[in-house]
Image (cartoon, rainbow, N blue to C red; front, side):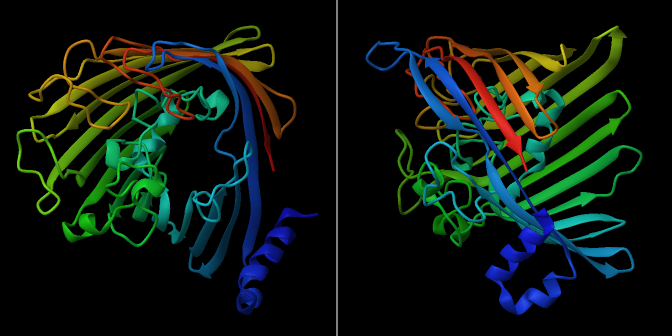
Length: 408
C-alpha cells in the first residue's frame, strides 16, 4: 500500500476532526529497523573480563512527517518520530514521539522548529563519524567525543533535548547556519526516567526551571563539492547541579549550579575515484570540553582521524581518536558523571579505534560488520557511546558486531 495513504490513515486515527485538512497535506510514513549481534569484552569491577553476546536495536524508528503549503513560499511542517526497540519491544519511556518530534514553519529564509530533537552539536558528527553504518550502533564514533553514553545532566554534549526552539538558515552556496535554545523545565520526562543523574535527564526538572537553566547550541556547516566542514558550540547553563560535594556548601536547600561548554571543528575532503574501483574520503575532528565543579574546572581535548574507502561494492571505514587527561584545577579523581565520561587527573586518557565494512543488498537493505574498541588508562572509564557497556575504571571495552538495517 502507498506509504502516504497509510500515513493519512494513521493521522486520521489520532485526529479525526482534522481529517479534511490532513488530506490536503503531503504526509509520509517512514522508518527503519536496525539491529546487530555484538560480542563484547570489558573488565568488570570484580576483575573478570568475560565475553558476552547481545542483540541490540540501533536507532530503529517509526515516523510520520508532513508539509502543507500556506502560499507565498511558506509551508507548515510537522514530524512525529518514535523509538522502536527491535530487540526487546518498546519500554514505557521509548514509545510515541520519543525521537525527533516537532512542528514548524519553512520558507525561503530557512526553517523554524519547536519540539524535541537533537542539537546542532550533533549535526557535525556525520562529517567525521561512521556514516557508512549510519553514525549509530556500537560503531558510533560518538563515544569519547560528545559523551553520548550519558544524559545531558551528566555532561553530555550530544543529546536529544525537549523543550527546544530551533532555526536553520536556508542553504547559501553550500553554507547553512543553525541555532537552538532549549529550556530546562518539568513539563516532560525528567530525572532517572530520562537516563540522567537525577537532575532532569535530557529535559529538566523543577529545580532547573526555578533557576532558569537552559542549553544554547549553534553551528555553521559548509558542504559543496569535495569539501565538507563544520564548527559547533554548545553551552549548558546551570544544567548540572550538586546537592552535596566534599568541602563545599552544596545542599538540597542551596544546590551548586555548574556551567559547561564544548566546541568541535571538523572537516572532510572527498578525493573521489583515485584509480579504477578505488576512492578515498579523509576526515579530521577536534573537540574541547570545559566543565565546572565545586572543586575547580576540568577540561579535555579530543582529536580524531577517519577514512572511507569504496571497496567491492560497499564501503570500508576506519577511525582513530584520542581524548586527553582531565586537566584543570579540580582535585584528581573528580568525576562529572557517576559512571563513564570525564575524570580529572593523570592517567585518564583514552583512545578509540574501529574498522567496519557496510554493503547495500538493495536500495533499502544494508548489512554491516566490524571491530570497535576503546583503550582506557588506569583511571579512565570511557565506554561505547551508543549501546554502552559497563566497565570498571581502566577497563578496555572491545566488540565485534554484525548487523542489518532495512529502510521503509
